[in-house]
Length: 113
Length: 110
Image (cartoon, rainbow over all chains, first blue to last red; front, side, top):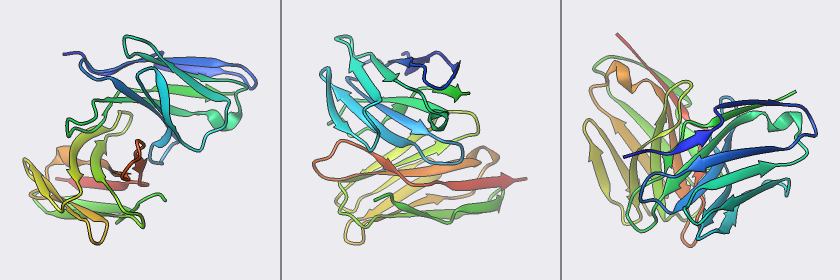
């Protein structure tokens, strides 16, 4: 049973560039959430996708956008990168109503120079 | 609205017990507990739904006091493998996002 997978594992970009991160959910899961985790902090909720729609959004600017595909995989796009966007980006999948929590992928570590 | 975790850090010897607390100022629907080891993703431990239930997972258990909006994670007879950062995540009724606390760093030494 494949768990949550993310790509790429590491990424280096410069300020102003754009980045796309990818996530495949755990088998049987239909909901994908994205989190940003700064060093030494807890994950911060960016948004959640369900049935290809953004269902809820955290306190992140519009530079952060996403997409969910019919196969439940998801992308996170960040435009006009800032130095402060450097962080670990985590994707988590779940299946609401099953009494289970979220299962996290290994993350993508983004460094903005 | 971030839940408050305490203590911030704790050092144990193998075999000792620990309690990690998580409290919220908002009415909660559920509380999740995760453990994250250095350089790895958070791993789901358990979820507690409102109703004041208690759950167990090997030597790790948790409770949720709905009246106080508090949850506690109990680690008994700690093992070296328990070392890591423990996060609680909270969900409110009608919401879909999980808000994580700042974490409790647990170190178990031999």
